[in-house]
Length: 436
Image 1 (cartoon, helix red, strand yellow):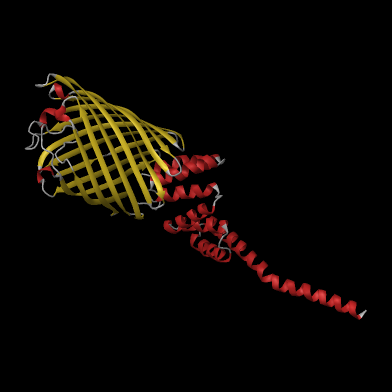
Image 2 (cartoon, rainbow, N blue to C red):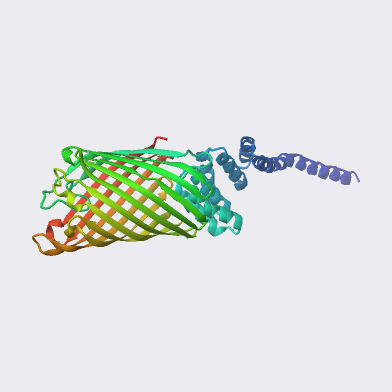
């Protein structure tokens, strides 16, 4: 009887002992779940700072818990701490099996930072995964705001790009190379300023403006230094989430070797149709009034003065780590002298691929054909040019506002008039920084 009583006491002691030692573990597990619940409640109330502190405690107790990581990232994002939010969202993606809302939040985050291709990429992934029609519509409309600041973003942007290039055929004029000129090589310093601003917006209407400035300084061939100014106001009207219209004007003014070289007035319109989160189509028309002045380098430059009509279509594509476009344009050019008049077309493609999160590669290619309408003097032939251009750019992002790029541009023109045959290769390295 005593032995039986002892066994009962012993068993009870073991049970009590086990419960006592298991209680802290159970309480710890309950703690992180409680922190998550309280954190979500604070998020819903808009108390993002308090929510973050609770969710950080949850992560301390359960570092691998996806729910804690997700809501902590949301809190960081709402506080405008986008770098920390991005790190947590990407950590969730690396673990695999992420909820579709992670893609939505990344799309919102990159939209808030003005990184439009990244935003579009993640929003497209969310749209393809979600069954929530309201959120899907929200994600479809969000990219329209990416190019203009919203919420915490500024109403203007200013960036500078500076670097150097080596050009193995400096004297080639972009559209019509100088005749029978010797090939000249040179290095140059380049600075390029870009800016844009949202001047007015209400409902589906927005008025924007941009200004670009370019300056090149050659080591030896100072007569080929270029100064370029570009002003681009535009009006965007959103008809629906899938349909929008843009009308704009561009003024371009160029100096070559401190002499007036050209002035362009361009009037353009664009209709954009968004088929889904991964595809959009643009129909584009522009009229360009072109004025050229004679210079010491191009003494008969002014005979190319005239106008150009351009019509074309561009298909945009957004995939996981890849985005870009393919296009086709027809050009109808009229110059002061008839042997500069031509009918032509351009077709090409440009794509950007994310090799790793800070490293992007951009490649493009274009083929252009021009058939001139009148006989070229002396040759008694109608000139026909076939031009190709290939570009590659490798960019590393140190941070949101700073990057370095290595670039290469290769041009070749094959003409039935040998004096217009040429090749040109331009290699460069550039640093880009946001100033505002």
